Length: 496
Ligand SMILES: Cc1cc2nc3c(=O)[nH]c(=O)nc-3n(C[C@H](O)[C@H](O)[C@H](O)COP(=O)(O)OP(=O)(O)OC[C@H]3O[C@@H](n4cnc5c(N)ncnc54)[C@H](O)[C@@H]3O)c2cc1C
Image (tube, rainbow, N blue to C red; front, side, top):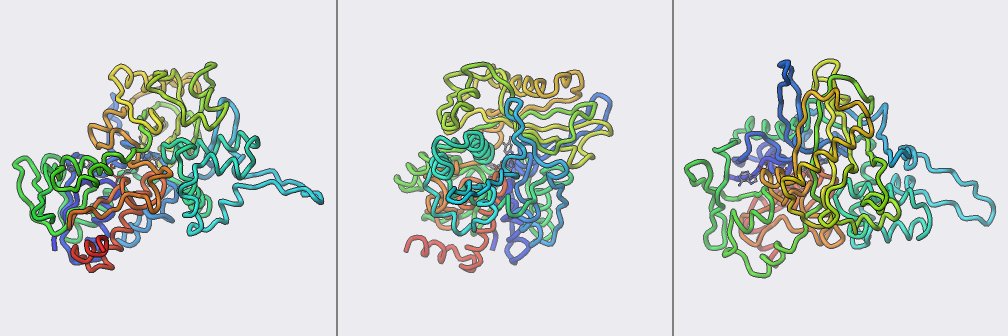
């Protein structure tokens, strides 16, 4: 049978690789961009001196590398991806000059005097909790869990740090972050201790998966040839797609959408093919946080770190100041109302400290991402997008005062650029991992149309960033295998 995949993001290329490697089915993958990998793609650029630099579109750091779902897909397909772990030095967290790096790792051992309670230790908890025991917490907001764990008026800094972690991982506020999803992801990260970055740039991962498709008789169409215009439905069943510059028809037994779930339903397929309640359900799904990203190539070595979470010193009454006063305020920050800050919180990954080949000799390639909205969608104007870029550069300058003198190349991926290229209204990951959208409440990967499935950060799976669609790919592949790739069987299982 022929299986068509729309999009080469981690979900699409990962699932395509598994099908191509482990089954006799023919995989056709369509990607409208010239770069493979969607938000996880990479590209090269030359500077004035003709030297080559490699940049990533979105992604900067991977939670469990070879020990997680991204590595599992590669291994099952007989491929090796080389990873650099975020070790020696490990991750650094700096909040307004306060170093928090050691806090999570080295909790103070409390002397347990007779009759006195031992202090609760989150690190120990995360190192020992079993993933299967986290689902019961899915609908509890993270802030409630932290207040219960530590006591409502205790450990403000630790609470803030875990709330920041959730913001970085999911783009959700502590009032909407699912505790279950938070615990699964943190526990996985703490127990596997293998956070890092792929040698060669993030694009190596989807490119490797696409190689597997091609090496096993499948086809990968990119650019104009890979643009899918429509998914063709007849009698509530998928028939194929129209793609390429001439809208050529490609027949298929299954179509798997890695393209964003809302665009797939409303534009690629069309409203008339879905029940009204389903359309309402899809329309009301909430995206995770919007992001933008700045990458700089500098002609010096400015840091030895492999990852740094940095919140600069900020002016009184600013958004960041409010957030620091009380982590719960993260949920109340409205950048739309208050405008773009002068400086912002950054997750920084100097990618050439993981792989020196990503920058010319003696230079450094530093990537950073910042949230531009939590729990809401903001349509930023061009002028505001420019301000976000400047806010990131200002933040770099407050960390490394003379950095501007060393910038050779600068790449900026704005929220609206992400939206225009990859959809999801500029969300970093996809459908938010919030109390009402994880676990049993996660959108299903099986659509109400026979033969149409979703595989991306929008449906199924769990995990941080790229690991969410990678797990979705592994889960959907298992569903296909269990049902002998029969749409009929899968469809009757969900409708019965
Ligand atoms: C700035 C930024 C920083 C991030 N940092 C991290 C990080 O540090 N760690 C981490 O793990 N994750 C990170 N993420 C998140 C991670 O990159 C994404 O969650 C993940 O890559 C999404 O994968 P996906 O499978 O959902 O598909 P996407 O990457 O969204 O890809 C979908 C693909 O479908 C294609 N497509 C859409 N419509 C069509 C069509 N009609 N025809 C053909 N093709 C189509 C698109 O071009 C795209 O390539 C970051 C994201 C961003 C934006």
